[in-house]
Length: 312
Ligand SMILES: [Zn+2]
Ligand SMILES: [Zn+2]
Image (cartoon, rainbow, N blue to C red; front, side):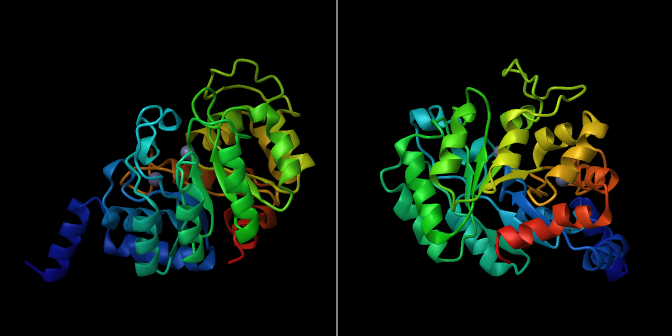
């Protein structure tokens, strides 16, 4: 068999793109770079070679890998449920190593906040070049002393903190978070996940609803945090981000206009395709392109805001 044909078949059988399609994606990416601020290594067991192809297929030119903390059986991990970010994601060491080996990747640093050596562990990776403390996805109060130690560490190292807000599961006390925004004015916080996005709606009354549908009434907590605090940012990733963008498109156009300097593209998808119906990250890029009021705003959301926030 012709070796190119064999290579193509091998790539296809791995679920990778064909060579021509990949070259086309690379050309498009060069013209319109995209920073993906939210991906994971070994996400639901996804092999590294598939992650690399997935990110290229989506058009991500730079990807930030968010590590899990070290595994532990504690209340903060819901007796181990939250280990690996509840998705088999690998930790700080693996992400740092991957980022060293791949120029288009950066890594975060992470640990469960109640580990006795959490700040030392995270600081070790910040000193090694980690660009964010994330993904903070643990069953703790958002203003607990152990969380505040991480915020102080973020201030010292001038890196953002990315938090997964999920009612009764991860980062409790969203309605009190304004006090942390005030107490740590030099720390940039990035909000993510169901409870963060549910609260774009002023009428988000039933907190147990994770993916609310239908029209949005402006003025929700999330909308207010973004408007009132220069150190509050939003991560558009995951099903929750895509749901928030698409549930009421008229609202979304104004929301993107209003917070055009505060919202950042992330994928957070674990599929092997990097396109098509299973790839939510690609759908989020399409939604941003469709709903951003101007090309300038689109570029801010897909690239410029992350470049500035992470000082790249
Ligand atoms: Zn998350
Ligand atoms: Zn995807």
